[in-house]
Image (cartoon, rainbow, N blue to C red; front, side, top):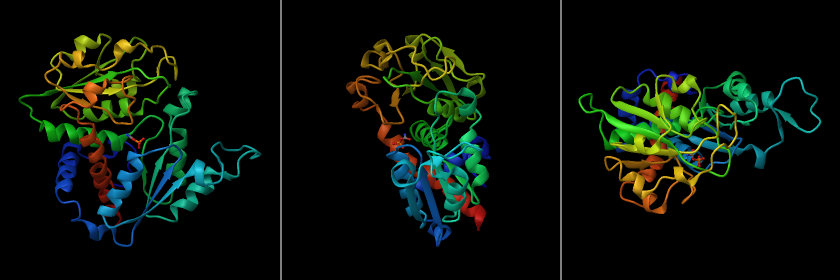
Length: 319
Ligand code: CP
């Protein structure tokens, strides 16, 4: 693997999930690939899970890491080309080029601005990073995608319900309310990954005008009736996202979309999933998040092995 931007960089998703699950059972068996290798982690936005799970994944592989929180620890970075840099001190071009000489793999997180749909959906910033880096780049969440999260998510589903063509499992991605306009990356990415897995019946439920971009959700059923969508579901994946159609806007804040115990009773004793961080009693009731059926911690733990299998694939391609 030469880079990891999205699921499109993966040859076979089912094989990758299997390998990640095996890695979890024996996490230190590939340490020779990480000897004298360094993974750089660059954050343009905050993180808890991604940051620490990637460090742990690198440690498991015997790699060194360094971490840079751009807004906290660095110069103010200029993203646009051709501008007179009156208010910024360093251009993204030099920053990424230099940082990439300090590591063997460069992992980067950038969020969308949620103002300019074209800029976000063309992944203008991440494409510049891919272009400026002299080493393989890993997407730790970009404007439109969060592939390490999705790999951990499908791995979690496979651990709980090993894929079977005879009995497909029903996974429902449900929009849930939030007070801030949030990116689409988790929802887009999950849609993209599960579309590659035949053994999953996937559907999305969200309010009107919250349909996801067709680029990622083409061919996926979207229901605007949450109760109907929940019927016989095996997994409920809750996530908020801002509107794609009215780009970046909050058009619904109704608590009627919150995930509740009552709604979970409509399902086939579904497992509850969320990528975290989650706002309790806004996105999901305490009773659901704290229930036996909540697998959010398993998802979070699997972030280690999702990152580890991707770093390993890239390290193997370097050797
Ligand atoms: N789920 C996730 O990416 O969490 P962080 O934003 O804390 O990294």
